[in-house]
Length: 289
Image (cartoon, rainbow, N blue to C red; front, side, top):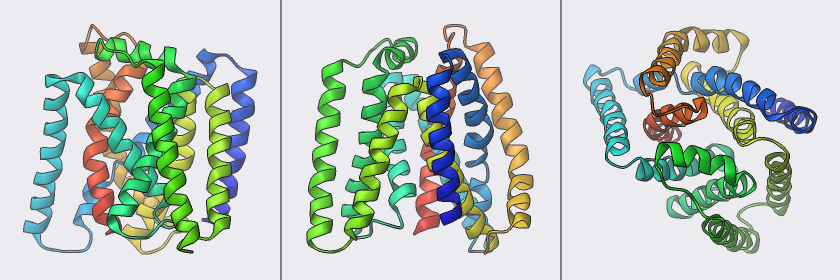
């Protein structure tokens, strides 16, 4: 994974430079390609992960039923209140991002970990939303008819930062996490803040979602499913995920065509991500525990 960290940092700096050189249309086009390809791919093998570990058909069917129930619940939530659905997407994604990025670094107890992971993700979203508030509200207006105020985002930023600082001080004082790890994560957050500031909303989200979350998650999934991380196991993962990826992409295009009141392609992407984030977060939680 150290080699991947070098790769991740290289592409983060490269896309930081890229966002300075090019306009929003080019940035968003690159971001859409990244999200539709690697972003969707990293969640396409959830059913294979559920089937891992126990050979019982009843065990798999039970998990499959839970998985489908979560998806249906997400759809019903969106139909009942799109604003509540968006908030749930942000909260679930926040925890999921924190769990994937910090799961091997922050290990105290389940409650502490949950609060830390959630605060980390909310802090990231608050930075991204604050520097791209106009673009965020364009999507929010189209999907929900409700917008975020600058004060709401600023308060969320302050609260999540305060929680992170308090918990980080606890980790340092109790020597549960090396100070070098905490400083490195602080540097990463500063770097991501600069990236979010210079890039469009969609590219900023894509940079974190793909290079800091999806690819590391995909590599962990490959190791979990096949027992090791080799070129052959990665190829097998992609082969098995391909059909689900194709279905997801077609579903994305169909949604874009059949929902006339949505004009922004980015809005459809966030609707699709919400539908798959909740069940995927549950699967990843089961995999890691």
